[in-house]
Length: 245
Image 1 (cartoon, rainbow, N blue to C red):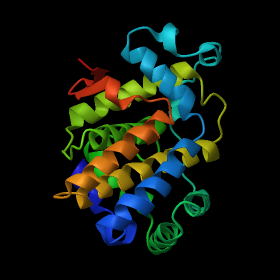
Image 2: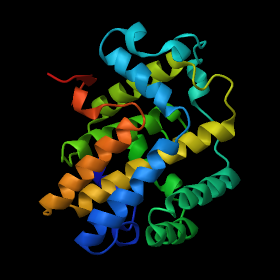
Image 3: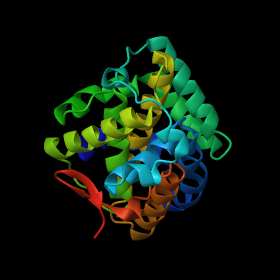
């Protein structure tokens, strides 16, 4: 999944050209400002943590535990091109305070191509969908975990589907999407997909640069913590994520 996902972006457009710019402007101000803005993922992170520990009631939090579950079918939505354009604009706006030039480069990229539609084929190849929140979350989760470990590896279809199923179970049990509109679901999924691709692009560009790889690992971990996901507490297997040994 990683090579094809990273390849959908022109890396020179997404990432600054110099390592020093990558280590400062991008890692501290660009990516880290957008991940915590994804609505509802803090509650989902708590639910995921509880499930990984095989004790859903211990760590999901009283609010999540009291919320009726979401039906599995509610993870899908019908994408709208108009909403996607608006989502791209919002993503750029959230990024601009931390990295004005990076935000401008993203705006140019978004105006030149539909980057979400470009993810459809590579994600389909590993059993994930662009119109499914669990699939989008799985793409982000896998990429963020690998980045946090300084790893840049392909992912099997079996592994991707296992992680998608874990995300789906957590989302449905948390109730975070109960009654959510297609617009809200599309915004969340597309934010996750863009982040997944940014991570993949960053890891691709960091090859051969140990300092940059470490910086990206730190940002990946920090961004995930903003979503209540502790990447250090889990390992990725063919059966999905399991508690770290």
